[in-house]
Length: 237
Image (cartoon, rainbow, N blue to C red; front, side):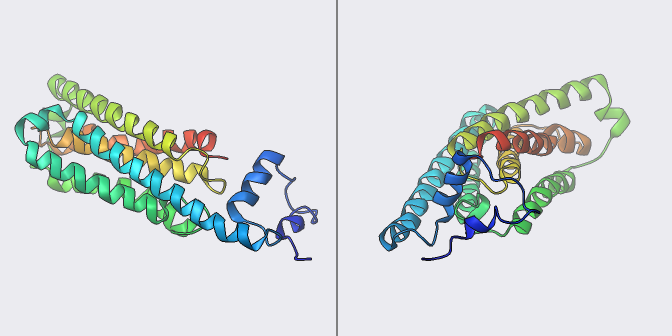
């Protein structure tokens, strides 16, 4: 009889208690067991890959449509650019998820790479926004009553658009990650935050640096934290 590695998890005093039957069965179904029949083990990867492709395709639609629907100002002023950015961003985001941004059956990006993305992507957004600024005027523009109002207005826009996207992605990838759902949720939140940043940035004429980094870029960090919390609840099998 083949040795089942799941049995060894409960034989050492240092190991944590055995999880509930629901989680245990989900882990075995996701990873597979050497005691499974050959036919079942041959079928399971195809089912997992099909599910991953379907979820990535749904993610592509959500990313593209939400960026178009939440960017009314850009749709009026530069519709061709908005459509191009929507398609490119949706393709890159769904490709990241398809290639292992969500671990699924433990294929794709290694855990350190996924954790690194949750730090690298928000930093990249903030640095890119700061580099694209025409000038920085902390006291005369950013902290003025009109500047604060404009920043809060853009921040509300990015959080609304990004929050809708994050919720949609969490729903699409629900119960998909028994290994690190907090990391996956943070990554989905960052994708939503970047969508909100693009939605605001494409239609906002304000080019002051603090306005861009706070009003347009802070959503990635905020939604990463929210996504990490929500992922532990929604993404766990």
